[in-house]
Length: 194
Image 1 (cartoon, helix red, strand yellow):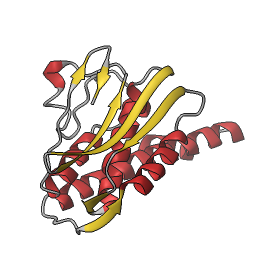
Image 2 (tube, one colour):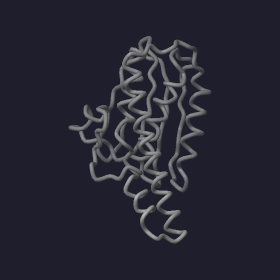
Image 3 (cartoon, helix red, strand yellow):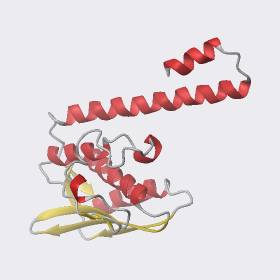
Image 4 (cartoon, helix red, strand yellow):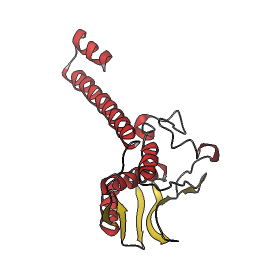
């Protein structure tokens, strides 16, 4: 940001170069804001006890699907909801954030054509299980435990635009822990992740 601002101040730029440089500054500032917001949320969740409110899962899932479909643009990815239970108790905005983060990751992992993402809610042995399943590229076994660490990225060469900043799954882990629940990741390379 500093470098581009200094460049704009000293160089004789045409209008197109000014617009490009300003857009770069805006993008970088947005990226820094995203990091600081995520770090703040991570720090806050460590000491946080979520509100216990009744969440209508069918309504929440419909909202999640609508948000995820807005990110698909030209991708041929099918999103399926399988809601076998009605309600969940927890803090709705945090559960929504959890599912959206997992959904964003699923979209990034899926092939652009033929991708499938399944959102599921079911009751098993007295517990509500929420899951996001994709048929994407999968996670190497040696990385499964590490992906919930802040700033960990499987492919270090991926750009921020494609790979994110490495805080999404760390936030998911904190949201899960705050709700006194567990987050389990199952994955197979080339077959997908749950």
